[in-house]
Image 1 (cartoon, rainbow, N blue to C red):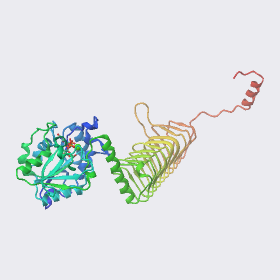
Image 2: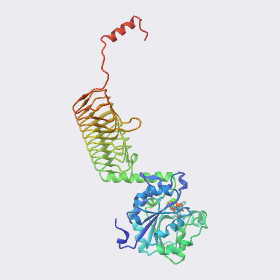
Image 3: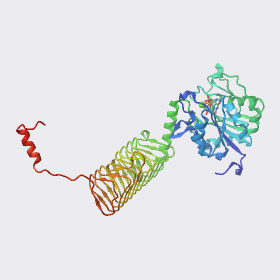
Length: 476
Ligand code: UD1
Ligand code: CA
């Protein structure tokens, strides 16, 4: 990404306030790490900010469970400052003062308002610069303004703002005001820093309110303006689990629409759980009640049948995943079919046109092109060559109670039903294993291995037993 300094605009930083506890969530986890669309709230905000400025120009204020929050988003390359005691939004910016001092302007976002779009941040900045304002706040007319700070304009028609008044500080005649402060701002750094130390804590929470900067700057003769948004839903924050669920639904709705717009068919999209980063190619069909999670990629003309959960997997074109499968951290080649009721555990690589059937479990298992394990099988720490058929009920015994061992099965081999392969063991290309075998020694290519008790025939045994019962000589 182009860095700030290379742009013609004056240098801009983005501060994301994420130090609060989120008391109303009643959760042990810090609020900004609660997830929507499969990613922490804060990660959504960082992603939007990083599309407007370089990650290095994004400063995240952390405090409550700072280590946990830092670890969760560190890989984004943003900078962090710590607010060890959370003494309000104004105090959060005081903690970031040193980090932003070198920038001409900075934007403030909340780590708990995850739907904010890069275009909105850019529009705010543009407005702020055009207005030559010291402070620009984003406002909106809300149907229910309860609990938000209200915007007091200098006059109804004026772009200029006199003050922001928090809910608990409203005079009775201000209660009807519907224009609220969305908690997103742009500041010119110099005047903000010049007056930031004047914030007081004489308010019902005993906190330093960033919102008080509006009156402070305005009184000092600086220009404070409001940038009204008509898309307040994009700017809503999360304060309760119910609000979290609502934003999650809204974001997943957007993801489903993005996929449908690119040619994916999703039946009853409202029943599907699709994470934000999932990619699906055109002409693939997703049936109701499917979950596609994490970094999942699915090719074209595939079909994912109901009740399947796929997490961090890459599936090729024309793949069929039947009902009720669980696929995690695995890959599936073009034209392969999986399920129903199959379980691909991490590290499974299912080759082109291979088949993994019902009640088959794989883990760190590689199946070559056209290989088949159609029924009731466990393949762990195994590789299976192309064209090989694994009979029903085959088990790779990969674990000796202490260590895991590998099973290698060559190409075009045939493993008879109900075989157990005790690893480490190798079965050569084209070899046959008789049904019901317990294989503990390597099988050479093209050989037949049978490892089971010989069948015994006792002629007429059953008829004689029946006869004994009829004459009363048998009790059972
Ligand atoms: C704030 C605004 C309010 C606005 C609303 C919009 C203030 C005083 N009020 O209220 O006018 O209508 O947002 O949603 O700013 N945070 C810190 N450190 C702190 C306190 C908070 O980093 O010491 C962070 C929180 O983690 C959160 C953000 O700042 O991400 C906003 O704080 P929050 O307590 O949710 O403010 P609101 O009460 O919603
Ligand atoms: Ca809030």
